[in-house]
Length: 428
Image 1 (cartoon, rainbow, N blue to C red):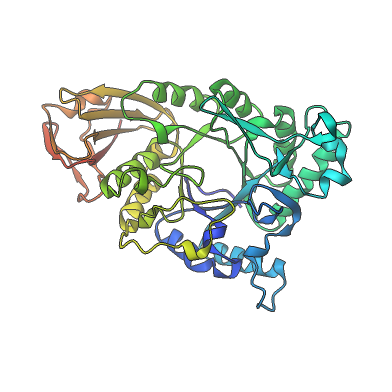
Image 2: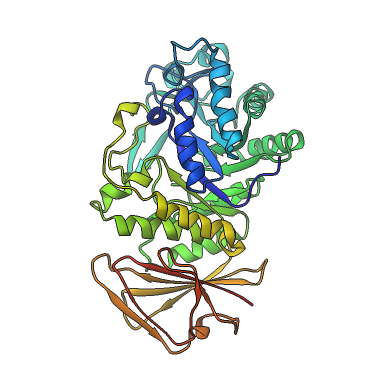
């Protein structure tokens, strides 16, 4: 099965969705919004912390995702969800957590050589730096991919995990904390997995690591890296530079929010037009986009990898599904929005307006965005000749959400609403 292009990814957060047998309505909604992939966080059995990312057993399912009243076996319950996804034309992606497991996993006792050990015979916990402060995850045990005395045993264990997930119908893997695992491990795992499953896709979760580390990971064969568009203020020059460097070695994934970040509707205090702006730019800026469950309804309660429950579903009175469907349709219908390609930022006389040009090296398409950075005020844009911003002499087509598709005159004037984004496409 050839992976669909583009990769428009809906993150079905399993603790919010509930048991496998309840996934179908969420899958149907994602398909109706134009998503082509469903990403689910780890579905394996967690340790005592109950965190999705503290895996106790890679072979057993999280009991929170099983319906104890169903006559179906656990494997059959998962297959029911997978079959629903296939029926809807959706491809399935899941997490691969290879840097660590639960501190209370029996792997620690059965295979002590697979782990990093500290003084006093204590297994090492992973950690990160947050604002210069070390944060240690006490519920995790760190695998020792670099110095284990049993490298083949550790590698084969994870190769078997991936093979089992492929057999269950998962065709892509978001490799959690990929930068914490040696490149050689990923090179072999990706090569051997793709030899058996040529359509397998690997995404490296690299947020928080130096850019040069992300670029080295791309050399291991990863198809996609995650970029940092979410934190761009539409002004600073660092994002275009990062985008250019990453795009030279792999495609990238943008997101307006993720399960690891606060909800955007909460950050923006319910400013829905700004949420729409952020999603549209994320969807069209990079080769792939990912959106977590609940964004479409303006959810404000942050997802939690251990404590979120289906009862946390919010009643907001917000419905952004039509806008998201339109943004996804624009992405799906134009190659320029399905790749990472050259971009240029053009300042405008009114500093609240930003013009972004994107040009494809693979096709003859170019795109132009005119973006109102002001979330509260209108701003007028006027240009005597839009052709100044593109290489083509042909008229531009207006694809902006909420607009009727039309050719726009070269002399163009428009007053942008707060947070509005205009989208134009032209073929050279």
